Amino acid sequence: MKHQQFETWILLDTELNQEQQRNLQVHLNQCAQCNSLYRATQQIAHLFRTSPVPEPAPDFSYRWIARMDRVENRKNRLILGATLGGISLATILVLSSVGIQLRSTLVYFPQMMLEMVTLITKWIIFLNQLWDIFTPLFRVSIKLVSPVWLYSVGLSLSGITAAWMVAFFRSRTLQKELLP
Image 1 (tube, rainbow, N blue to C red):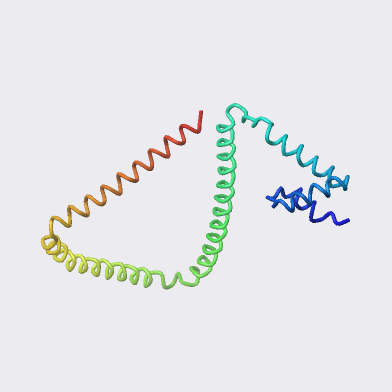
Image 2 (image 1 turned 120 degrees about the horizontal axis):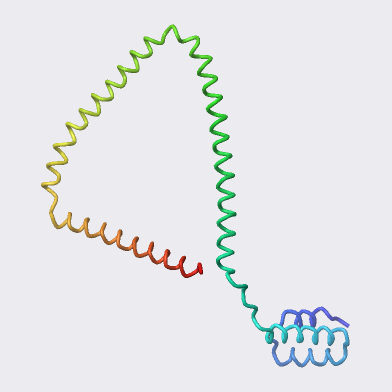
């Protein structure tokens, strides 16, 4: 006798049409093994339906959040330690290679300092020239921009800030509700 189809119907608890239900009942009347399986699944389903839902232990949320914080802190310390170790190793390698090269370049140190001061001076002059170019452009553009546009941008930024603050305070309130 083929049991597979009937076992599938019993275990999956699928919706059966009338013919399938009749075939299943006939088979259950003839087969003790499938009948036993059917009764066991019915008893289990009844237990699930009638058993009370267990309540969490007192302060469960608080303990769970505290545990998650400890796990997160441990993970952050591990990441920080690995990062600092990597940076320390890289720094030691760079300093040792620079130290070896510095010995050979001590003769050229005054010339290198002069070139560095020259380069910094050129950058300062360049940035000063950019400032001289952009300052008048900024002053003119402010006069050309409509005040309505400036108010629109200001109100938009205020709205975004207000929405962010509302979301922030709601999340803080939710956190306080979760913690006893």
